[in-house]
Image (tube, rainbow, N blue to C red; front, side):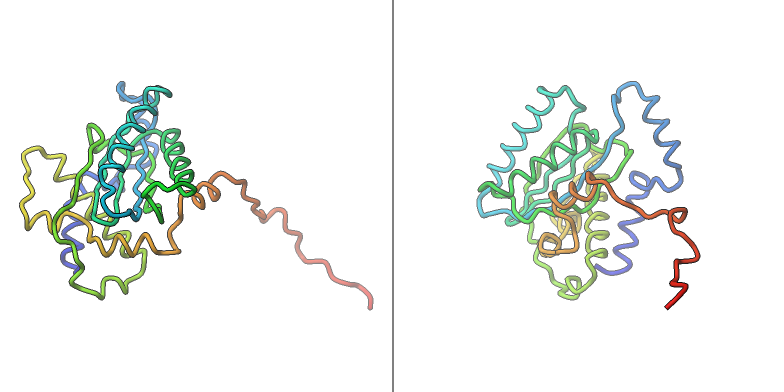
Length: 238
């Protein structure tokens, strides 16, 4: 992806997703004063590899799972979009932190089963955001997404994640506008490249759900500056 395209993507998504002009306290106060929100909303985006002809199974599973999750826990509704590629997926989910934690645990349980989701990688977990989608939906990406510029795969993983997220957020902004229609050429640029998604799923740099939960649920022992004795002890005799 060229620099001009990347900058244009970033410019287009700023009105909907750029919250740098607001402080976190301002965003939290805005959400707490909104009457139709029970908890703060967070956004999880992850990618995963799939097996062939598994689109129906994955879509039906999440349709039933998210509906059952909401009925049994009375938690906040789950909104977002599931992008289904021929051999991988990108899933964007918006809900409370409790619901996202249960979804991550469900992804961990899938690793020991024959469910068609494999090599799951967490792309980003954003906190205190505004909902983008009114409900949960899915979309099958049927356009040709073969990577023409092989130099993109040689870029760092951080660059691939940033450009993929920028493309997803631009897609969300386009779908949010009901009047906008994506033609064949627009769809070609609206969805992240399949080869880039495959590279992210195979990257050891990104966290799997199991590693992510272990990192953020286990206590961390930090040595404070006040616990360090200075000067260090020395032997006064030989």
